[in-house]
Length: 285
Image (tube, rainbow, N blue to C red; front, side, top):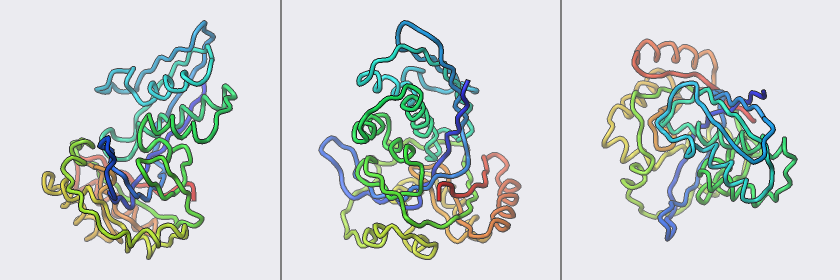
């Protein structure tokens, strides 16, 4: 049995720049992988046909055939022939519905595993297409480096230089529907003045702090004021900046010094007894 680590991510920048005819929003994002992990264990069994069986360490409210891993498996089957049976168990440590990309990361790890183990030779374009059809964050997790992400998630450009940062992440005891967040965002197109700085692929901490922004915060803050309260708490404790990731509900504070992040992590745990609190740092830099 192989055990693989599927890490979480944070959005340090999320700007909605348009909408396609099919309703999908066009995005510009800065995504960073962090060292919080689901564990994906995979056992391969001889079989007459390609099959997948999936279990979770804790029950989740999703039919197994609709999980991201199963979706990736079915999409790959359309392009390649294989007959193994895969028994997959996922130990969920990344909070579900937090905006930290756990399901997408699980799928990306499984897709990369199948490509490697089965020695599948597909074009990069087709792999990205398959990943994007599973979920908008899956292409990012295939690269798994701090990156500028565009379109509906299919355009991923890794940064040439990116700082090592530390994070304290507080996850409230509720999830936020991604669909709801996007439906309640009022799109007003503005100049893309930030993009020039972002696309130079050389990011330092000062530039990052100046451009950090999440368009989805506005509708979320109106309905869930506790998100704003967590942001204020983290910044008062010393975070250089605090922001919601994705469509929430996780909120994170950014730190340059590990010792300060550790102190705020302990204070956050004491203050938010009913919430999940994590400390982490950027990986892939």
